[in-house]
Image 1 (cartoon, rainbow, N blue to C red):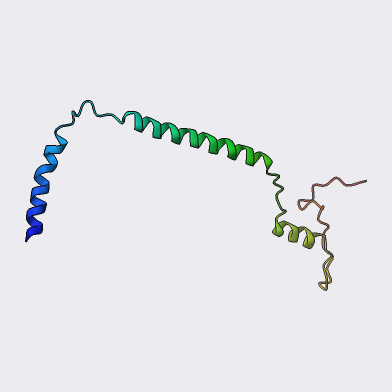
Image 2: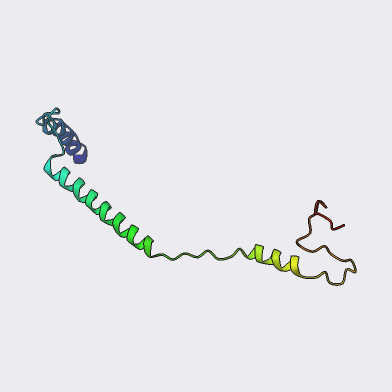
Length: 100
């Protein structure tokens, strides 16, 4: 059981090492500031690069395949049904003006 004694001894020394720091004066210091500043500069450079790359993008949206199928079926004549279909531009409510 030497492991238990080592663990017990380690737990007694940890509070002693932590007490020598003044809790009111502990700050990130210069190293913390430099790390934060480096991260801020890195993010700024990444955003600048992303903005430049997004400006180069020439995006043209592809037509919806379902809309293309609807247009093709609406303009195609009815085949084999024997009934005449209404043209695609006809008003379904019948409110179109009539020539008299």
